[in-house]
Length: 164
Image 1 (cartoon, rainbow, N blue to C red):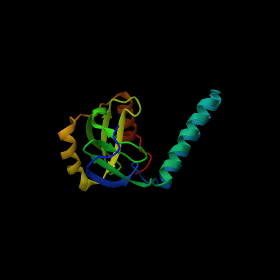
Image 2 (cartoon, rainbow, N blue to C red):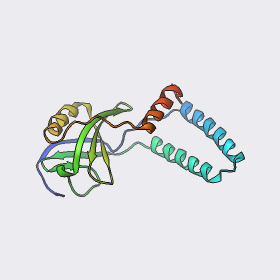
Image 3 (tube, helix red, strand yellow):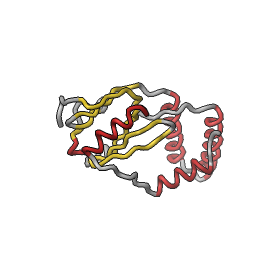
Image 4 (cartoon, one colour):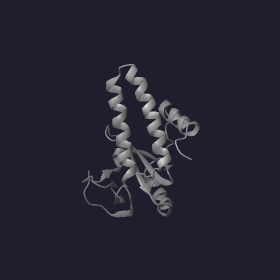
């Protein structure tokens, strides 16, 4: 991995997509959590109750604290992401695609690495075209792979909304 290289594009963006949740969302979530916990209590699934409560708490913390902004760079040698000391070389990247989450544009980079297999970077809408022009010269444009969990999650979010 390379430390210094010519910067082709740089931008400031949050480290993750963020959406502020309202009281309606949290009250609906609490009601569903209470019902599920009650069912699991009678089934004596203590560990599962603790795991579910832990995930809801983690989600609460992440959705109540806005992420900090960091500087991302696309260089001639690879991608520089925040808090990673070295540039991720182009040879470790397989392809890219764009997605949208909560009105944030995302660049998704599939890697050859075991960890992380996909790198997601939030990018401002006005930098998306410039990033696409640079990336298409070095990487193929991929279509995102949908698995069964993605299909289940999109069905639940569409048919069982927790907020308006």
